[in-house]
Amino acid sequence: MNDYSELQSIRMFVAIAEAGSFSGAAKQLDLSTAAMSQRLKQLEGRLGVRLLDRNARGIKLTEEGELLLARGQELLREFDRLMDDVRGSSGRIAGALRIHGPLGFGRRYLAPIVAAFHAQHPELDISLILSDRFSVNRNERFDLVLHIGELPDSDWVAYPIAPNRRVLCASPDYLTLHGEPQTPEDLRRHQCLVLRENDEDTTLWSFHQNGEKTNVRISEALSVNDGDVLRQWALVGKGLMLRSEWHVADDLAAGTLQRVLPDWQVADADVVALVPHRNGMPMRLRAFLNFLQDHFRPTPPWRMVPAAVEDRVAELA
Image 1: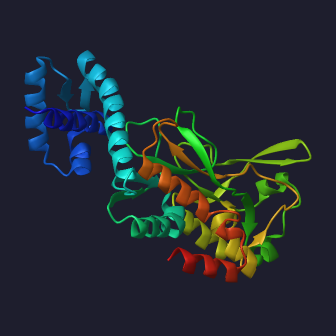
Image 2 (image 1 turned 60 degrees about the horizontal axis):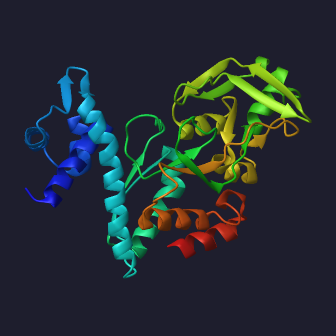
Image 3 (image 1 turned 45 degrees about the vertical axis):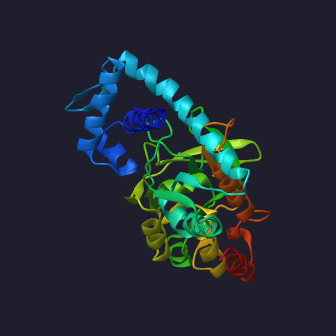
């Protein structure tokens, strides 16, 4: 077997280990699980060791498998970097990019940016995965993860993309009917709308003002795991919600939502890009990261006047 085929076998094994299953790796590599199982057996035969064990709950790497995973990841990064450098010497940006982003923000902002970047570099193979449930600590292989809010505890490297405040707001009809809260404590007597994401404590709302911090345990009138549904509930007067400004800036400008407790601040939820490693970043990833940052500079779209937003969209297209 030649060295390139051996490298492909290692890539397949790493994909299985990172995905935690044969089916997950099969989707990523566009191979059947049967073909992957056969290739794995052949690789184990050539090495003379067992690399993983399969059971009803998934896979478990052997000690030899853990070694191959760690060293194989390093080898693949160096190989991919070499290929990028060679392509880059001729001005080509090619290869594969796997990107993850939050669902709502991804639909509105990330998807058009990915399409525009691909139009400039058609030799790229880009996979965009949108989901509101993601952990950088799981074995999911992405080149870049777009993240909003508090940074997770991980060894991924964060690059700033755009500032993003969180605001408390409600419809004018709701405030007319129920009155406008004057302090965070007043929220205990109001109908509150809650977005449930990951494992966060979503009913503990924190505010700060002039160095003073106040935590309020609210009662949820309605909760949902979809930000667009939460916004729709707020627009029809079902209650107050905490939401990122990127999502409600247009509603606030139009007056269909009104900011509440404007003298109190909530922790920002800035937009950042997370990448697995600072050193050895492939040229295609560096180019996309720069393209992404440039799109939101110097002012993100949600802080621009409508005419400027239209101009920016036309420029991107």
